Length: 185
Image 1 (cartoon, rainbow, N blue to C red):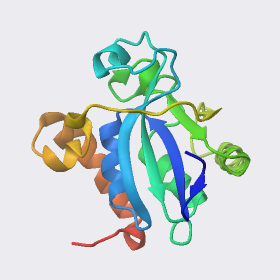
Image 2 (cartoon, rainbow, N blue to C red; image 1 turned 120 degrees about the vertical axis):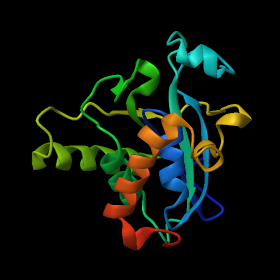
Image 3 (tube, helix red, strand yellow; image 1 turned 90 degrees about the horizontal axis):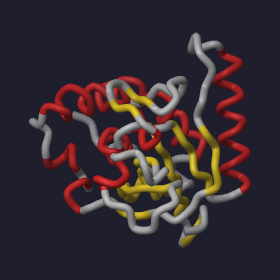
Image 4 (tube, rainbow, N blue to C red; image 1 turned 180 degrees about the vertical axis):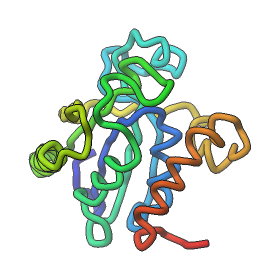
C-alpha cells in the first residue's frame, strides 16, 4: 500500500512486541485501523513461531492507517518514540532478538525524510544517554499476523504480559497525549 490511498496514510512501525504498539495506536485520534504483523524479513508468509525464533529477519510491526487531516505522520512518530526505547538494539524490555528491533518502514520519500528528521532532532535533544538505533527502511511486504494477535490487549487485559508490559505503555501514552485520545475516561 502506498503512503496515501483514499485520503488515508499508512505507517509501519516496529518497536518491540506488536501488542504494545497496537494497543496504543488504537486509542489515537485519526487512526482508522491498526494491524499487527511482520515486515522486513526474507521468508514469505512467516508464522509467529518462525518470527519469534529469530531466523526469518522479520520484525514484529504494526501497520497503522490514519487520516493525515487529523493526525500527521510526524505526530505518529512522536507517539512511537515516547512508548518504546529507541536506543536498545534488538531489544525492548525482556523481549530480545531482531524481531523486536526499533524500525520505521517508510512508504514514501516524505515519510523517510520526516523519520530521519525526527531521529536527528531526538539525537540532538539529548533525551537519552545512548544514541537512537531505530532503523529507517523502505516498506516491504506486510504479512498480517495470526488472528489471535489482533486486538490482543483489548481481548486479554488480564493476561500477565498485558498487565505488566502493555498496560504501562498504554498508560504512558495516555498521560503524554491526553488531548489526542479518541475517547477519555
